Every structure is written in C-alpha cells, then in structure tokens.
Image 1 (tube, helix red, strand yellow):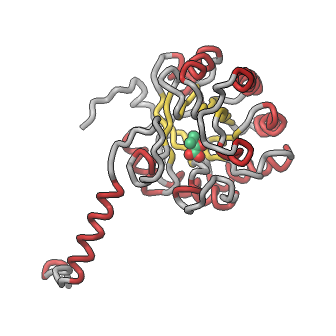
Image 2: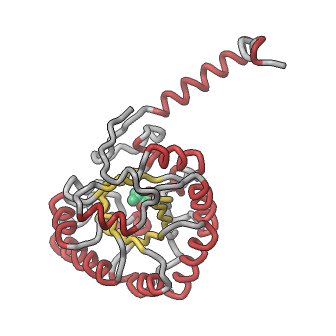
Length: 275
Ligand code: KIV
C-alpha cells in the first residue's frame, strides 16, 4: 500500500475550486487520461485527482495516427463511459478537432452536448487568441474550460512535427500572452505540452490558475500522462518526458500466450472450471 501523500485525499469530489486550492497550498495535481469505465474506475479508486478523456483516444483507442479524426459522438461515448466509473476525480473531456475552431456558436453547442450527454465536469480546448471567442461563449454558458498550449496535437499539420514547441522567442512570447488571455477569459486551468521547463515554470508562476504539464518539467502545478503510455501498453511512443510505470504490453501478451497454450493443450478448462 502506497503511503498517502495528499492533503486532499478526504475530499469527496474534486472540483475546479479544489484544484485552485491545491495550487495555493502547493500540492501537485495528478492527472491521467482514461477513455473507458473499467480504467476510469481503477484510476478513481487509486485517488487520481483529475481524469482527462483526451482526444488521444483517437490514437490509443481507435488506432488513428493523429487526434484529428475522432468525432464529437465518439468523444461523448468515451466521456460517458468514464463518468460511470468515477466518484471523486474531476473529469475533463477534450473538445475534438473541428467542433470549436472558427464558429463560436457551434463551439457552444458542441460543449453543451458534451456536458449534457456525458456528464463531464469540464471541457478542454487547444489554442490561444485564435479560439478566444469560442472560449468566451462556452464560459458564458457556465461551462468550465481548461486551455491547452504548447504542442497542440490538433495542429500537427501546421507544425509538421511533434518536436518541442516555444523554443524560439516569438513563439514563447505568444504562448505567455495566450496563457494570460485564457486566464483573463476565465479558464480554470491550463495544460502546457512539450515546452521548455523554464518557460513552463515562468507561466505557472505568473498566472493564478493551475498549470498542468506534459513534457513541461517540474515547475508547474501538476502533471498529466496518457494512461496507455505510462502503463507501457503503447510501445512505439517513447518521448524523453514519458516515465513508464509498467510494461503491460509484455504482461498482456504473456497472459494471452499462456491462455492459447492452455486451450490448445486441453489444460483449460480443468475439472474445477466446468459445471
Ligand atoms: O488528448 C490528450 O491525451 C491530451 C493530453 C496529452 C494532455 O490532450
């Protein structure tokens, strides 16, 4: 049994206000992705603070090579499944590509569908100034929004590669401006993905809302990883920032090989495993 390292372990339900309190009290926020009921239930029972129903589902659940193809209906399906397994964690659902860029009225109706149909607690959106009108409109409907800056995978065709972002001064300056704009608009938190640790720490110090990093170093208010990466289910993806806590891909394949052997050798089912 792991020792309890959280002052917030007795909180019945993590809300956006609890996250704010965690930042004020210097307690780091632990966030992971989940896309289904069974995994979400395990994460929640283990005491995770935040579950992100990420559009990384497009990659790890559906096998696409980017996050672009996943649809609003598919995201709602994943978020609904996650919500059924969660009692304590705050659940944030990603707004998928194409449902909020460009038209703020459509953005609001996409966000309302996510909240109404899945029961998620909040939505996450990628981008800064370009999506501010959509962010404003969604916030004005009382829907909590988390921002996402730095490497924003929905813009992969603009970036051309998944390398570290904001290493150049211009891009770093825009990122800092965007972070302040999103805070001022009323976002409750911000994800910073794959940017220099020094810049991420600077942003986290300069805004009051919690900043969650992925490949953004230790100077932020919390960390997020994709569940399938940290459990070692995905093997092809090995960025420097990823810590693997398990090698589930080996374990699952080992179990499946044993099952195949047992079936083929008539070892399974045995006398106790039948009626
Ligand atoms: O979709 C996702 O999993 C994400 C995280 C990488 C932050 O946006």
